[in-house]
Length: 274
Image (tube, rainbow, N blue to C red):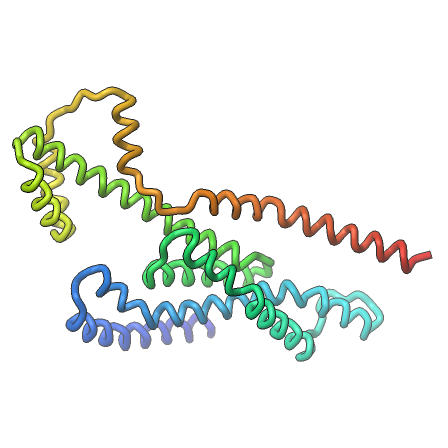
């Protein structure tokens, strides 16, 4: 029933959104900024979707031990399934709201601006991918970190941007070398052609690159020169220091939490048990 209802809702939303996008497409410019403007509402919806996923998993992780303890104290025995009263869920909601108000802004700045540059379309992809991943994990009963999953999505978008940008810069470099060496063009003519190439459609770019590949002369350059050219064209769109910090956090936080938990339990056991 859930799959059927979701499928029907998806068809209805598709029909409505298709009309809206067609109308808006007639008013916006055919460039990156125009396309980005289409993702305002989808980004808001995906952010709400990610918040829902966050509550279904991370908050459940936090109040799980509390619910189990409450059920054990109330029933006097350990059970396989514990009922979750409303006040326990309210405690989790209050905790996540308080944490977001106190420490959330710093983490929002880190995730939103310090890893890689995010526009509306990229942020939508990150939020939607993280939401789907977390909800699937929640359905399977797997406790996961929504924050780590979202950060993984950001790195995925950032590294893909690096690859696409580097690949595009290498193609532009081949065009420049071909026009400079083969066709003996001056820099002004080359710059004008590159500007025209940037605004061309994907199909036109593909045709020109195929023609360029057929006409290009084999260039004999050393390994060191190829390395320097490749390094010059590679765009660093992901902050490497932040990547190392987050990997270190992923590696060390779980063992540290395990050690602290065991230490606290050992101290309490020594205090309360004879």
